[in-house]
Each structure stands twice: as structure tokens, then as C-alpha cells.
Length: 231
Image (cartoon, rainbow, N blue to C red; front, side):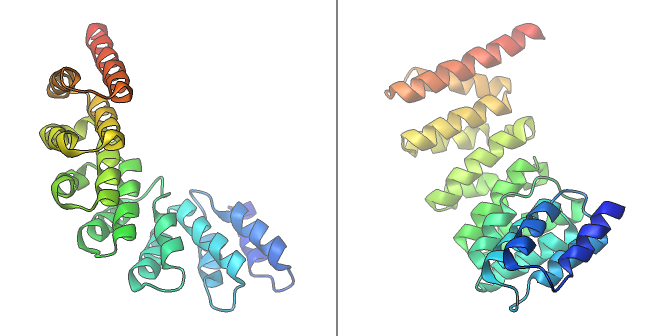
């Protein structure tokens, strides 16, 4: 805490060059940042901050995974401000979060009409392995535009076995997807790893034409069968 508070004091300094300030801002973006450090970063999210520094601030706020930091990023991204796309992209890099922050990310994924923010919120939920998001993600498999659907498939896989209810919907996505999306679906099914997922992978192997996807199918099937033997 003492070191973090020292960094916070440096961030509040008015004597640093923009280059030096940007370097300290990047250093400050770490999980578990102290309240003083997060507050110092939040204070730098201001119109008077040089643009390169402010972009670093947005990225560092996401890296702290602090509730207030994520809330600020959601506010920037939702309002369509100058840094909206930067804030949305930063949200996709959140790697840890409190229950309150997880709930806000689920809410953002459900309610935003901004495609980029929705996709990045879903990416974060996948990284967080947030099981409460699974029903919303399953819905998006059928209704979302391509970019959001791809992030949804990836997120369901990262969530793992808690996404078991998504196995059949992922099969539907596979049927209509291009080669890249089919590969993502195969990887997701392999990570979900249930008996139903293995059965579906074997069915898909019999109809797949793409050599790339066949290779992915074979690898996922072998991995799951080896895991069953180990049990």
C-alpha cells in the first residue's frame, strides 16, 4: 500500500512530462490497486489530460478491476463520449471483479445497444467465467450480430462446464457458421466438456468438410476422451 500510495502521489504531480506521466499511469494499472491509486487515475480521466495519457488511463483503470474504475469505463462507453471505443475495448481486458462489478457487466451486456460495448462486456464475462451470464449468452447465440456472436461463443467456452446448457445452441451456431465460427464452437464445446458436448463433437466430425475444422474436432474429441479415461 505504501508503494501504491507513493505512485498515486506521483500521478497527482503537475511537474511530470506527458511521456513520464504516461509511463507511471501504465505502471499503476494493476489488480488490487489502493483507493488512493484508483482515485488518482480517475482524476486523470479529464479533458485537461493529454490524449495519449488519457488513453493509458482508461486502459489502466480496467487493469485495476476496481468497482469505481469499471463503473467509470461503463459510463464513458455508454455515453458515446470521445473515448467510448477505447473504454469499451478496455472493459474487454478486465480479468478479475467483485460480484457488484460482475453484475454491472452482465447488465451492460443485456441492455446496451452499442455493438462494440456488448461484445467487450461479453469478452470480460468470459474471462471472469461468470456463470450468471450464461442464459443471456445463449440468447445471443441466436440473435446477435456476427461480432457479438463470435465473442459469445468464445465466452461460453471460457466459462466452461457451467455453460452446459449452451451445448445444443452451440450446435445450431455450428450449422450456420463459417469456418472460423465453427472452429470457435468446437473449442467452446471442448472446454464445456460434458458428455453431451463430446457426443455432439463426434456427430459434427462425421459431417465436417473443412480440414481445419476437422483437425480442431479431432483434437477436442481426443482431449475429452483422455479426460474421461483419467476419471
